Length: 183
Length: 248
Image (cartoon, rainbow over all chains, first blue to last red; front, side):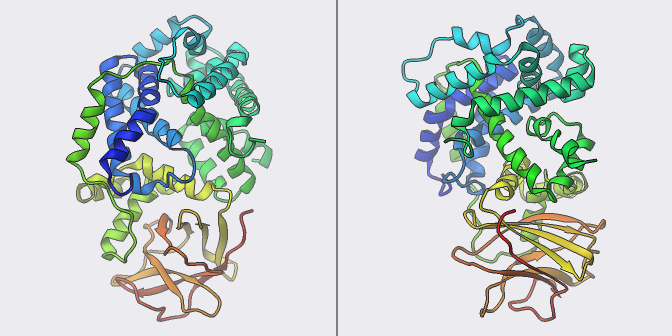
């Protein structure tokens, strides 16, 4: 990648394009937007490959971070956050984690990614609803703690406590996927 | 704020859910607190994994071709190895500084000016990513650079795996016209090696990243004031100096 090899970019897309697109769609909620976001994100990864060392850390994580930021920027720029929030509010209280169980995995989905995804979905799904909700609103909605408090009409202190507790639980249940706690 | 209260901000920070002023204060604290840095490093990994909770969707068939087509029109940025013209180094430092600590808000205006000349490089996210990844790596070594306990001071993070240092400078007035500051890496029994030149903003602060020559190991870092453009070797005694210590 850092050498500007186009085949590397193609391989990067083959490996992570679906993850990036799924994430972009979960945030932007419109297919045309998700396509723009992913094209932007891979363009950015291509231009800045030298700033990242794929030998360390996870390339998927790097791409996910770029994609999420691009997606949230776009949602904010088009002033559609309110609409996105409305639709998010319409999703039943099981939130995003429950809908993914219903989505069939494409046959070519790599096994290790499938396993990691299942673990992440299960861990998120095992959180108490209120904790999962604040984490999803922060991650997929790009909302700050105060915005979440306003959205949920809950005291700010409650939101803070839930976010902290939820993240600590996730850290425990996802330990096998984390660099420090894999043992 | 007690240490315990600070650590409570690690989870919302990792989720980017702090208000801007809170985030700024916490980032200033992070540069001083190894425990919170460790906490943030782990929670960021958790955040990154949340991408996997998005329901699976299949990208449109033409997307791959489009990405490759667009890439052909842009040359990727190569990693900087050789010395380059100082103004470019300074401008690149501005780009890299964005998104981290106090430097963020104050340097955003300067960054916008630099962005015209460096359109392809103005990528705050990847820069912030790279900066954070450099600092938060488990094998990072740090040095506190000080002038006998008085201001100015600086803190240096050296990530040997990435061949990169990140430096945060405090209370250092900008160099006079025609002068610049220069950062040196010094290994025992060897001549100092320049890591690059820099200057602070009007408020005396700077957060910047510099490349370290591959294979270079050093025990001491120092800062001197040099003629604009920097010097091959220091021309004066360092006014800031610090010993590298293993990651705390």
